[in-house]
Length: 487
Image 1 (cartoon, rainbow, N blue to C red):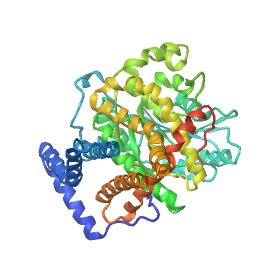
Image 2: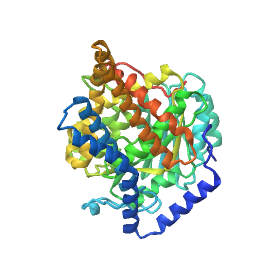
Image 3: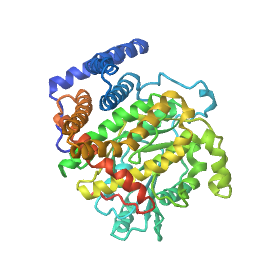
Image 4: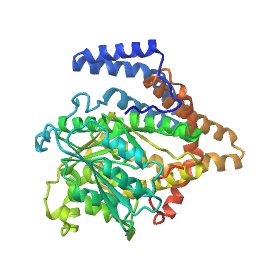
């Protein structure tokens, strides 16, 4: 099965051939030499930003300006992310990781060809569910168990799934009562017998080799308790908003997740393609399904919270298991609490339908803000234990998200009202500059694809619109239901 993203043509044959030859020569080098060459090329590419950063740092003590300090901090953070993503990241499915934990022997090895349980929960996705399930069944992995849970759909989805169950080798579970995504996936886990539990979303299409790449990463690196795949937008022909999100997704995975993966601490194994070792999450599934926050059941944080159980079980695992000691997920087998690492494999591809209209896009972003808030109170409580670099990435990002509403109020409301329009222009100029830097990184990875020019639009959208959603998400934390619709 071949998946082509509409609206994105390939690079010219000459450029593609030259790029292929360069990569082949780079991969043929000795590992140590290859790492040094990649670091040198990354530094050369970042040199203009480094010079700009040095120039601002020299000027700051002589003319202190809070806006200049803020701009330097953002620029420094961007440079650090790019440096980590391009000079320290290795795809664990392609080559052995250069940085391995000293306690690597403590992790049990997977079989050379582990059994994989591919799990999906769906609710009211009649239009797209067939493409998703067929892509799951078409993956090129031999020992595969497919489990699909229909979470009380009432739009004709059950009829589509019944027809597919007669044709494809899948286990179909029909729920009469809506349990929500987490509850439905835990039902799937109850019948899953795989060494690896792999999740996708009902609006996704999975590449045929995606499962194999995830499994290769986990088998080759026993310390990895989970890996995230690489996600792009499937419906880029739907609207400009969808095309902007596609470029944004590329950066969120290729840069942000790659930077976290350099330290084995990816904080969100994203739902479109999320592979977990059974030992790393099985005992914590009841805690995930019954998660409560501020005294009420919490239906969000599906991806971040489950990743948090992998990252933090060395410090939080025993208490979570004792709280759910009567659950069959805990009674059946008590797995040891290990200091697992969490990675990201760029070669495991998946495409998801992104919101194409402003209303559905804003609802999705509000759900993600709620997930961020809830997860901050869980993962934020132990992330400092995972080392200074991983902690700096996590808490730095959290501080940026929390500070964004105040910064927007100051620069987009307070400044114009106090006749400081230049401050507003400088702020917006910095936002556009950051978006251009991320766009140029996209162009380096995808020569010949001119979509990189849309990336600054996402930066402006994040600044002018999405930053306001955090206070709203906090005020409406208990409200909402789960759905995958991208209409």
